[in-house]
Amino acid sequence: MQAAARHEGRDTDADWRELGATQPYWGVLTHADYRTENLTPANLEAFYASGADHIGDIVRRLTILARKAPGGRALDFGCGTGRLARAMCDHAGSVTGYDISPGMLDEARLRGGGATYVDALPDGPFDWINSFIVFQHIAPRRGLAILEDLLARLADDGVVSLHLTVWRDARVTPEVPRGWRRLAQPLLARWRLARLKPGAILMYDYDLSAVVRLLNKAGLADLTLITTDHGGHHGVIILGRKTARPPTARSPA
Image 1 (cartoon, rainbow, N blue to C red):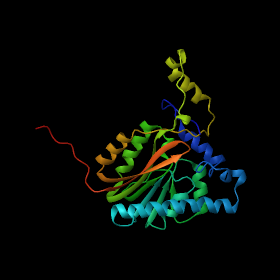
Image 2 (cartoon, rainbow, N blue to C red):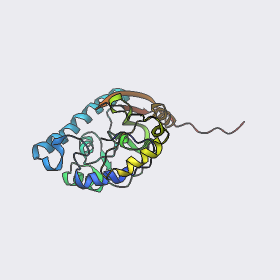
Image 3 (cartoon, rainbow, N blue to C red):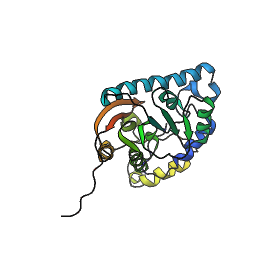
Image 4 (cartoon, one colour):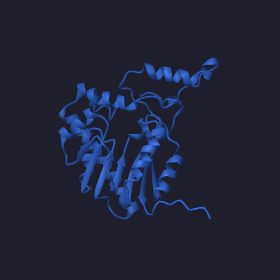
């Protein structure tokens, strides 16, 4: 995986369209077993079983937070090949998986499992919005706008399970250049990104305070954080329930 860019000029959607066409399962879980050339029925079974394990734990935790199991209408944002959307069908009345990668959506539809897969974000309201290992590949300025849009589609008393990366170990932090290279760092970053072929996997860190601000503004006050570590990229799974109506702007006195 490539370190996060220091600007937001990369077309990451093009990267995921390329991955969907060439390595749709490895693009979701970067393990050698899931590369296209290594796929076997047993590896595919393990791939989807891992999704069921993850969602099972999320449902258990959401049930504790909301005092009821998630259900109703659910959305898996960045569903990829349907690893989690399929598992969500065991708990929700209906599940929609959204992704921008045609190749991944083709694989998700091929595998079935009960979810509906789309390439246009559907209207709400949703009773459960889930996203895992997705926002970390979206530049934060764009990602925060997407998050705000998603939260606007959450039903009253609905729940979220959202994953973002927020900091990284020093060993995976890009080295700060010295001398003239430090001054030219923005140009060097753009030059390096331009040289990457389509299909690169970039990692971005989010400002957690900015994320919590959007959640609070959307009416989510009850929040639980689960820490994650993917190869030195540290993140949080945020579990929340919409318990209050979003505040409205007050007219000047």
